Length: 118
Image 1 (cartoon, one colour):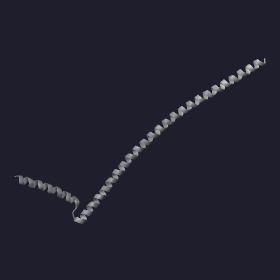
Image 2 (cartoon, helix red, strand yellow):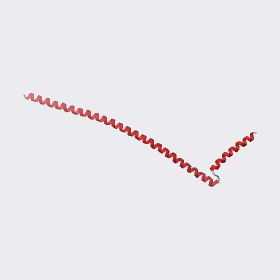
Image 3 (tube, helix red, strand yellow):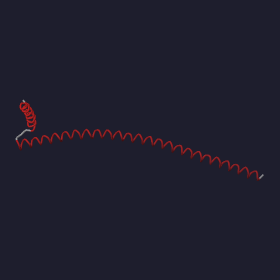
Image 4 (spheres, one colour):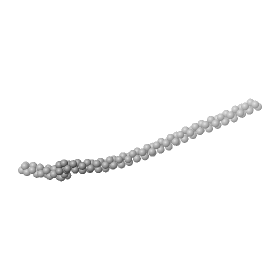
């Protein structure tokens, strides 16, 4: 009888051990599955955040270029005004009138050349 009790105890312990091993194995598979799900979620989140950063960067780049262009126009306009002022003060000649005078001289030169060809 004692042998039957020992064999019954061994079977009982073996059964408990097998169930415990199976439970640990299933917990490991569950942990692996959960890890893979979280990895995919993280990759999706990182991808969407990266795309959002790229979109924001494109917007900032466009805004910056527009600001640079408008600032450049203002600065060039101010520089041109200052150059015109200095030329007018030093020579007494207005640059806008000077460019008009150049056009008139070109027209006059063309007319004289035409007369000389006759």
